[in-house]
Amino acid sequence: MTCRDNRGTFGAAMKRAMCFAAAGALLLEPMLVPAMAASRPVPAASPSGHLHARPLALGVGKSVVIDLPRDVKDVLVADPKIANAVVRSAQRAYIIGASVGQTNIVFFDAEGQQIAAYDIAVTRDLNGMRAMLKQVLPNSDIRVEGIGPDVVLSGTAASQADSQTAYDIAIRLLDFQSGKAIAEGSKVVNAITVRGRDQVMLKVVVAEVQRNIIKQLGVDLSANMNYGTAVVNFNNTNPFTAHGSALVSGNAATAGFGNSGTPGVPSVQATVRAMESAGVMRTLAEPNLTAISGESANFLAGGEFPIPSGMNCVNGACTPTILFKKFGISLNFTPVVLNEGRISLRVATEVSELSTDNSIQISGTAVPSIRTRRADTTLEIPSGGSMAMAGLIQQQTKQAINGMPGLTRLPILGTLFRSRDYVNNNTELMVLVTPYIVRAVAQKDLSRPDDGFVASSDPQADLLGSINRIYGVPGRNPADRKYRGTYGFITD
Image 1 (tube, rainbow, N blue to C red):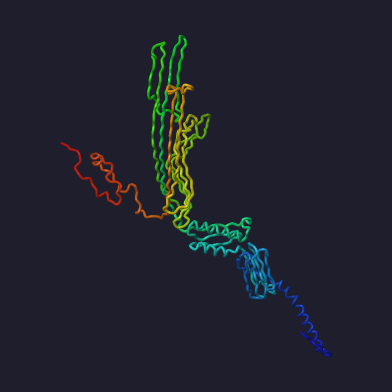
Image 2: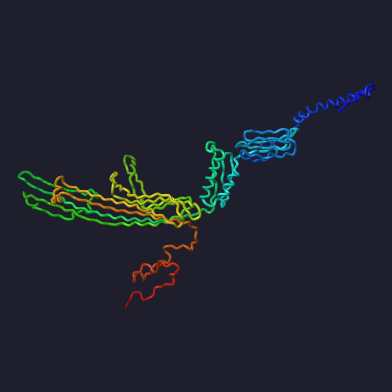
């Protein structure tokens, strides 16, 4: 504003005073505007602490361009360590993610009015991980989300192997991006759901053959001799120690020498014990189990036997505490379907039986030992392929000679003063395992062991000695078959 100096008149003086007053007001306006703006009422804030905050997700080291409706005068960044804002022009700003975390950024104009506000969530850049999972696992629909320093995998996978592969890739990429994932406590949460989890049926054949040969031959001598007033008694009993006991409780043969009934006449009595045993035992089990991929299944064909485990005393009366231990043929397997037709399988099988060898006595109760053969393996096998765990062969030979020292070494006569015990045991065990990927079937496609079974009628059972009329003919209607012929009682 320009004030001209018109001297000499009152009107001119008044105009000059008004002009300077207006010019002073214009000079004071820049200082009054901030004060007036500060005195204006601030609108009510939202729960997040600012107005109209919009969420914005950023990756670490990534930026986003923000176009604003008015010129920016001031920028408020709550935590510059998480994210920062750079203003390059009056109405354009750049927001840059610095580290994982959350903060907010507010933009103000020249009058102090809020232009825009953003809730910033800085997470790891997961676009590369998403692209890698899509490329490696095209048949799976896997979503990747970041929660702070952690990564959550969700969605669906075609198989359990694909789910594990996605988890492994996420771990590797997470370590590659930060280099400090383990030190920072970052982790990957696998919440992937497997579509239509496969079921695996395991067909197992456990076959065992045992051959036992035992030979026992011994002589027991007893003698009674009198020499005047002196009486000499001789008794020699030779035990069987290799097998642990004699095969028979009585004597196989008895021979007496001398006259044991005449006083004063020496008498000698010899007992010959001889027995030979040969036996064979065959064990066969064919269990079939079905389990979901990744789960375990167990099978036991056998039983339990009691063993004392301690004493329970009440008012001075003590009774043994009994526990039961399992024995028999047991099977445990855990299948994991890797892809179509291939199965990773862990199989543990055990064949155990009771034995009198190494048995003990506890509180007057005989506790037998358990003879066990166990196999545990992990392998990868196609559906329908077979795996054999063979070579589980055990051969045991025991031989013992017991008798009187010195006399047992006599040629020929030494046989009268000793016993010989010979034991030979051969055991061979083989386990055949065949896994199949199976699907559910209709009930009409299944058969039962009692299909086609019809019990015999009274005339058939009494007159012909039949137990059943028909058995094991599925698909045939047994009602059509009736007994034909003359039967009944004849009366006069």
